[in-house]
Length: 321
Image (cartoon, rainbow, N blue to C red; front, side, top):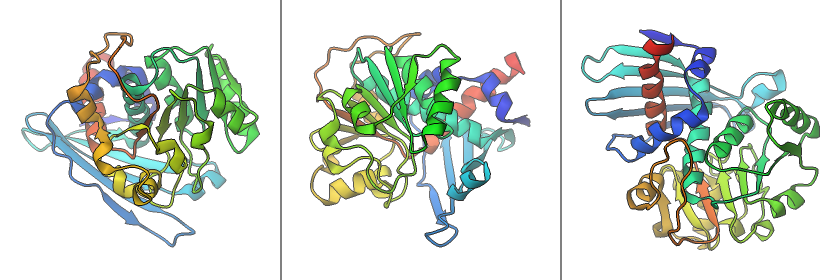
């Protein structure tokens, strides 16, 4: 069995390199049981345990075990930790033990990038990243892999953290700067990616451009919100899994209010099955298919994405390790 630690995973893959394996996976037939979600403590503690299995016949079986401890940030530790086991379909033997945090960071950003490739404006100028946590650099990398941006803005509640992330990414040659005011930044953005632990909406629909694409990553429980109901109203909405309709406050609340309807929400798999956008071969390709001006993608994490990313990592091990 191969053991891949955090550094190994990053030597084997980038966000951009996982977009096409994920595209193929979302177009394939797979078994993805509902993930097991356990609350480990009182609401004030908000400790969570997730177990996410998936398998594809004649391919592989995989399961990810995730812990979410928001209080870890106060101690300089990651709030999300995970381990992933990839198992042979043929023999049932473990093939790889993979650092689940690294896998999650890369695949989460790659899923958002895939959705943006399908939904975002073809020629955006400004990308706004809301949130300064571990996912922020990966999400920016993913969005840059499918679209070109003249300017990248980053906003967080703590200006010092925003500045630190901006300086780190500026060193890569990325055109990034700190947004002092969230509303002003949101009004200027063509694509907005949010990865926060917010429990009250940060983004208001009244701020958004008519053709804005909104990528919501952070809300994974019913009482978490990153965007208000107006962000969803009239938008073309897609999700990584229909489970998001029961787990994310960003969809639960507008559905309950009648602002949006379940039958008007598509999954990534459905978008790909009916999309006229061809698979990319190194670069995003133009798509002139008509669509709603404003788009919204909500991801809560789906085990199929973990499995596809793990398979891609395992396939690259003999050539790189």
